[in-house]
Amino acid sequence: MADIQKLIRRHLLQLKPYSSARDEYTGWEGVFLDANENALGTVGGGDYNRYPDPYQSAIKAELQSIKHVDPANIFLGNGSDEAIDLLYRAFCEPGEDEVLLLPPTYGMYEVSANINHIRTKTVSLTSDYQLNLPAIREAVTGQTKMIFVCSPNNPSGNCMRREDIVALLDLAPGLVIVDEAYIDFCPENTLLPLLAEYPNLVLLQTFSKAWGMANLRLGMAFAHREVIEILNRIKPPYNVNGLTQQLALKALQNRVEKEEMVAEILRQREYLERELAKLELVEHIYPSDANFLLVKVAGANQLYQDLIEEKVIVRNRSRVILCDECLRITVGTVEENLRLLAALTQISNR
Ligand SMILES: *Cc1c(COP(=O)(O)O)cnc(C)c1O
Image (cartoon, rainbow, N blue to C red; front, side):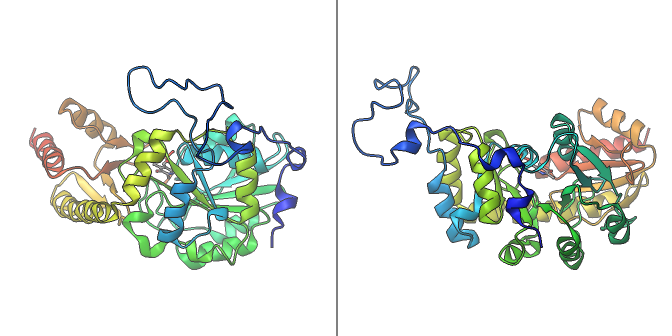
């Protein structure tokens, strides 16, 4: 089992982090003359003249009661993308370490590896978009610091089998990052309960999808406290702005609204699936646990362009491994889904 301290990049073990004014004095009452803020207020109105809480304790307290995870096991970032970048910077030595990616998968894992000059190895998923454990076992080396698993997977939409991820946790010499960006659409599949058992498990979740807050940029990482500690140590001090914190807190207090939206999106997904299946140009619809469908069509590139002409924009995934002739379609509102179906009918009748 991985020893977190041994996985952290050596030069960071001694790092003395930036100590902000809000680190040195943590109360909220008093006369604050310590951070060179504008005490008079905010130009243009609003209440934004003070630096935000660097550790977002109010949100973490709320997450603790919802997800039953201690705040010491929670990191919040400027989108999950920031957490991904910080994981590379905390654990992977440029030009030395490597990470394992399992395509077809979310593109940021590779982009972030390239930015940080970390070698990537790939083992593609099986034809039914599950983990290819024997091939992964072959590919793993002592330098494999992180393995990225996306579940539900973007772009295929399905969850990985839980027992396969557990096998991966047992065989990995480093961290296993499980990206649960879409987990709110199939909450029963979360691996959060495994956190206590596996110090090498890092779970990523986000406010960008089911919570409807993509614009605000807020991502969560749940992990062993030593993993969270190093992420906090190297992050920019005020990485989550105050407005985002305030609105996320409000969202967390409106969970019923989120559940209703999720239920409606799932109903619409089923409707779309049924209607798409009736179309001749649709060859296959992959089972989805998320808020989108991967759809195999006759002539994906042409159909993608034809849809754009009808002012319906989907994602063309046809150049991605194991996604030949596939479009990824996000579930929209009732009206948007009808527009999509009308456009498809129009195109097929030409
Ligand atoms: C959308 C998405 C995210 C979200 O990233 P944010 O930076 O939190 O917006 C993360 N992972 C996957 C697989 C996604 O599809």
